Length: 120
Length: 408
Image (cartoon, rainbow over all chains, first blue to last red; front, side, top):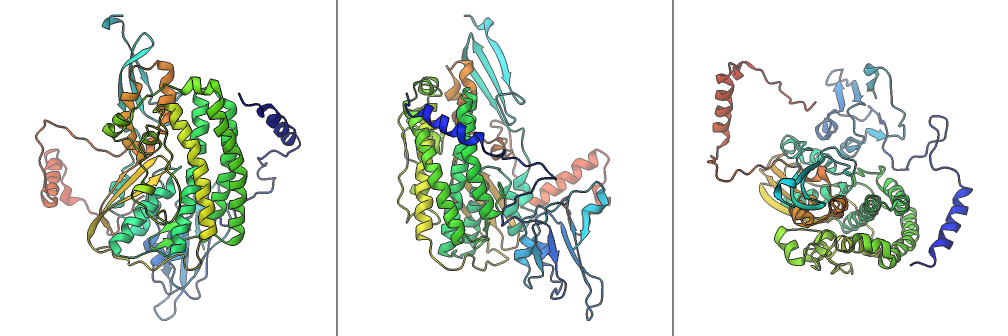
């Protein structure tokens, strides 16, 4: 039998008695997410040349980048299907011009289905 | 008792003692198990077929979702195979990061198992303890990869996330705290008489039988055979790391518990060694988009045992075939042997002792021996399917297929 066990448990019980609970009340409480967390994307169209690497490597076909202008005068638009995105951010890694970034915005739920497709 | 008094009890597919779907049809003679039929395949998701219509980068994220516990090891096996086909070698720093994450994942998996096993035998205090410690490990995984489960660390040619100095300190702090706890579990497992009395002699699998049924991981190591891919066929930087393969001679559930607890301590040592000796440099090399034609078998040591990936490429962006042999799949074969002659009350812990992952396991393989089979090439298979539908009044030729195939 373990002799040290009861003492160990008493220590732990006293320590945890004065601790706050590990869970937080959402949305009132402060949310803690890891620094590397990948949230919603942002898009900077100034450098984008429309190569489509983000679309090619997206595992869930969630991102669409199209040129609404002409070949000379580009007008790049990016949209993201939030319900399909798995937030792997492979598009951020694949982009040769570094036009895509990930943010820590994780509050993306919506009651309307149409709002789940967002313009970046 | 005569044969007429035998009772057949189906455990599963939905059952309180099973967290995932699997059906065990147990025939009982009194309280003793005299026959078992292990029925798996409720969780088939067609992952291997889906791989054939995706490119290599997309497949990484698909294979990461085979299993929630050992997601990193599947991608490591796949990336390793593709890197071998492409003839690229990854930077040493990337290899070290792969090993660190793999070992943290092993800590996470073994602690999870310890909790589940304790819960199955009614030792819920241990379950709470183990899962509390697992939380600290998951926090570190979240800090490294951003997520608690699918970290997205691996990519073809290296890793996507670096481990900086402050993160290294955090990992070391976590391992120090965890080591103390694991030593306590070790003391508990080796000296606590009630735990040993409950687990000893259950799910016996001798070394000979373990080899016969092709068991892997902690199951075969608890039978006294030192089979560990990290030592037998070292990948990444395991050849440089001094570690010992943990074995035990109990050859039962108690042995498997001891092996897993001692492996936790060994993993902590490996993590410390890697953090101390991690070289500076790049974390990724450029990989080609098209992978040269060829085939490769890549093996890694997952927390549950040997994980095998077979990849056949045809020189394009997409592979011809990806086959995954997850460790749980290898351990199922010995399950009937382990359950025979046991009491019914011991069945849940015997099943839990191999750390079964039903999602890992399920790949559709049907081998009907004794039936006439025929091998068809692609055009013949296509013609066969057209004729099959025509017989039922459907004209396949009139169906228009969109240019880009959508998955959803």
